[in-house]
Image 1 (cartoon, protein in one colour):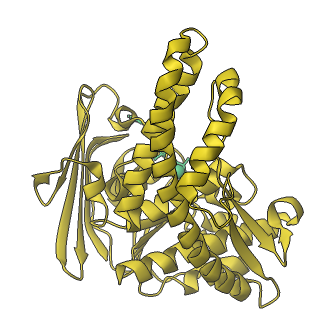
Image 2 (cartoon, rainbow, N blue to C red; image 1 turned 180 degrees about the vertical axis):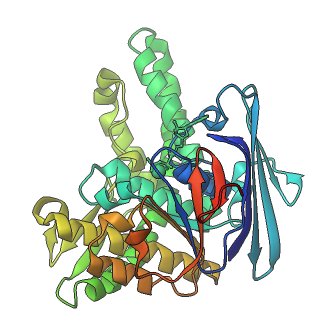
Length: 369
Ligand SMILES: Nc1ncnc2c1ncn2[C@@H]1O[C@H](COP(=O)(O)OP(=O)(O)OP(=O)(O)O)[C@@H](O)[C@H]1O
Ligand SMILES: [Mg+2]
């Protein structure tokens, strides 16, 4: 897959701009706070319908403006696809694919695909479980629309149930309606758990390979799914429903749902030892890089072509060995890299470089694009 055009109007700090990334490595360089991440963010938005930085679309519209627009064109094996997002201060955004407005955001999946690697990702291992769930959600949503829908329905049911839990002490008659939400949580939650388990097995295999290579065959990385509830051999929906029933009184007291995929985690282990607890900082970073590259491998396999890869300021965070490994993996993958210093990319074969300055995209060394 290849992105041929990214057009922004009143998006973040861009008034109007277009980037036409090249086939190989496109570099966006510039000082801090000029709009490098914003450009990548617009691509993430076109892939998943959601920014990786905020759940609120309004923050994406240029300050003082009423509406914003993102347009992305890609060439895939089956031809060209165009995704357009119309952001509005007043209404929910309109999403169009090839000129046709979509009814559901889920239909967006599979037109533009990308993997984003940002400095935050280097902390996937060290940070809390939410980061690791986000890793699964971002990727799996792009390759399996059913997962995206299950996530949405689950999140909705969870919000309703939690609201109810907090209302019950004030209005005990509401207790009877809990069962409906429990049933919905169990059904969608079980779908999520099943898809996560299968996906994590794939991730573990691919991450293991990558890690072995980066560590020069010395380290053995495994990734294990750690669901908040172990169904044993049982039907996960039934197990989840039973667990929700058991936790009910505690949940009412706490006003929150204690069990379910919103509490899942991943365990990364190096030679069997939890990398989060025992890994050195370097090992944790390598594991995070292996995980990201696994994401790229899995997506490429699932799509039958490589997604675009976006590296947001990670080069400066990697040591030369990891950097070289990453660069080796870029062959045949359209890549957009951001950096503040071009020397971070000294070893890379750059196709095109653009300077990002105050919301404008200028040719290298030039003044105006
Ligand atoms: N809705 C908005 N309207 C206008 N400007 C915005 C909006 N949201 C963010 N900005 C500004 O856009 C600028 C670009 O932010 P961005 O994160 O893309 O910078 P960056 O080039 O990636 O910087 P860094 O190197 O620090 O990561 C920032 O100055 C930010 O304050
Ligand atoms: Mg940035």
